[in-house]
Length: 489
Image (cartoon, rainbow, N blue to C red; front, side, top):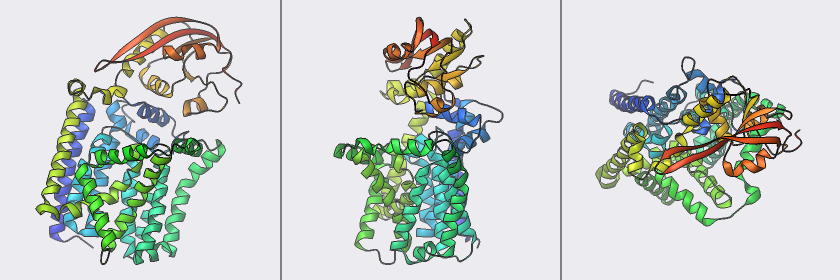
């Protein structure tokens, strides 16, 4: 059914504004001198050999980078899918807000999502959260449509989005929990979940995920083991301060007024949920995610982005509440704060010295200095007949693979254990008997690692400035005959 003319105008206006923000984000991506995060460099390396799985993540992120880099391996090309997918997510949130609260809420929800502090930061990087949020939004929109539409197209789209989301990040499993909660609080959602169409959603998602599960089975389940290791429940801390710190971080990434609006909407639902089916479903797709991650942060630790899927449903809930307060002025204030932060972030990305002068250079140091390291290592590798370049640190390995180009010798991963702990240790371990190695390490770590060689000598010590009085210190050693840190599998 076509949208009424007034709703079409709002959708067109949202598309124009989100499109303009996206164009500016792409310009910033091209203009920034900031280099790849270690994870970004690792995803680029994965994209050189597309597969059904990788050590720490499902494969969708590598496929996306592979699709965006057929003609250029520049940093902007690796990252460009991020602002584009976030733009798509914002426009899908227009539809989610419209279904739950009308087109006006949908319009402001699209703009609010596009300018959230966490989304502004994420748009400058490529990460697994980007396709996860897009797939979550498509699945949620389809779920909402399927509640009141008996056709099969929406359940099938929901299942496809759920399956692709699982190929982006296993956190997409939270969607199933949220759907179960929605079935408890909403009659239409319950009919969908318990119907044949609900079963089809789950079956299609499992079919899409199955090649990744088979890949894991054939490789000893490394992705599942890595996910479990990240949770780290074996070393539980039960720290209230961690949980409070995580919640404080949510006010930062979601925005203080947006978080206030969301909490107020939940409070109002708790007091009176009559006639608020749309809001109840949105609450079901936001509250369980945040609750689980708060519990995780209490038991062990949690990064602020781990609760990112709750933004998709939380934004329309928050916007609907903020529109009622003080004649919508709080919503305008929230958008103003978020837009100001977005512009400040763009300025810092284009000119990192501005961040240094503002005392925020520490936030960007992991995106600086890698090109200089790569050039130094590549240059040294050409001065002697080395058999391999080796390092133990995953971040250093990932950055060398990208920035130490061109090179004629392979990069290998040193590991003291018998069980690999990252993708590089699993796929490119330094083999016992390698005769001449250019070894890259932090000076403090050198004694333990170099003890696994017959002999070694210091070649060069690097102290790379990172801005704001920070520097990255690494040493290059010429090491002879690798004996193995321990027996390997």
